[in-house]
Image (cartoon, rainbow, N blue to C red; front, side, top):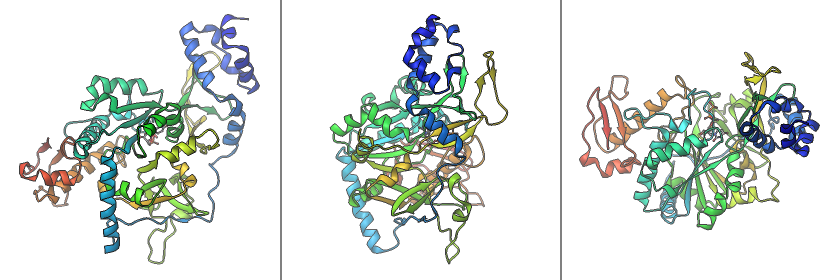
Length: 479
Ligand code: UTP
């Protein structure tokens, strides 16, 4: 037997063959020792025991699990408050939130392990230059917000960042190279999510080269087990962290910590809480907050039956108006219970048909013109139905949601920059500072407030006497 095959080991070889994946061993005789070793790591990471069932289930079903027909729109706390009772509740909640933040019981959780394929940027999405004047990257912008939050709330805030093996090295090197943008190094914790192999339509794992499977990150749902497996969940829990504030790296204006939201979560004794937005239309690409059998679910836009998405109430408003900007709060204890060895939690896999390059029998890389494979991902919000208690509170879109998914058009770098300028303009105007505007109402200049000083509208109010009026047609950067 050739020595490379021997190195693979008979048990692994048998598992591979038993699963009908013998083609994965085609080229191993040609691999140098280093490539063989890394390929072995990939093969060992595959869940061979469950692979057969996983392939059968996900290839046979053309869609994800059918949507139940008993679903109804999820209730939520409106924002701004609609009456005095809510106003008083929100005031109390905000105080509670501030005291929780100050007590060190809160840490931040950011998912940044995705491949950002739609953006088409070569590198971790967090290293994409996004701010409108200084071209700060997502990572820099959030680092600066966190520095200001640490100062404002006098707390040793910890930041947990999920990467994937596709971008973990580049991400940690980027932070090191930039001296963590001024954050204490020991307050930033990277952890790596798992990867999933792409599966061809005939049920074979795809090889992207002679020494590599075609792998992709296992979805933001991978954060739950990755937090546990990395030991971080235990570590922060021992350090007294009770609550995680979750946001996605590509939502530049997401508030990393939001006292009202955090306080309401605590007052309501919730396990998981979510911000919601009124959707711009029935088909906006947001998850939909729904209730089924008394449990809160988020149904991805692509899975929402059109008749439900388009359903309206008597006043003509969308019934399923609540869309998810992917801003959540998780109790650490809830994640611990979900990931405990006896919990048996398995988040459902969501499939997407994709064009995945592969090597043919001659070892030549083929770039298919049509989708040829499925990629599988889990979504973090699929843990919502397991929560004992959940709450949802409305967010102002212009204050919390500017997703960057595409290079241009809807949800793009362009729209994100425009939203940031508009948000900063509003914060200035809120402090009584005049912003030059065009006849159509848009700001007639560029504005960028440095998050090192201006975490929120309150910070602008605090410093308003030092702020110069923005010049028409100019780039106005405030630091
Ligand atoms: P998206 O689902 O929008 O994916 O991720 P993406 O990778 O940014 O972009 P596309 O779909 O390839 O174009 C939403 C958030 O979840 C993170 C992303 O980094 C982003 O912050 N994410 C996504 C992960 O951390 N891991 C994943 O496996 C998928």
